Length: 95
Image (cartoon, rainbow, N blue to C red):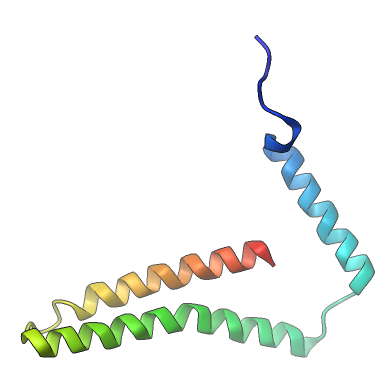
């Protein structure tokens, strides 16, 4: 039986290619400054916090409209957390 996967579909080859690209970029651009690293950390925090706040505000509004206690607030807050963590994970893997 022959392997039908192409060279681009091999996870090890893909990982090696990404590492090589990152190393080449590091050689070309050098170390990042402290300010740039702090800006990235701050941006990463806002990527997580913003969807959580949106879920919190939407949940509180729905709970006030329907007089339902925390019925909507808690799940929408957790949904915002999940969305924020997923977005942060994607941003970190693309950077």
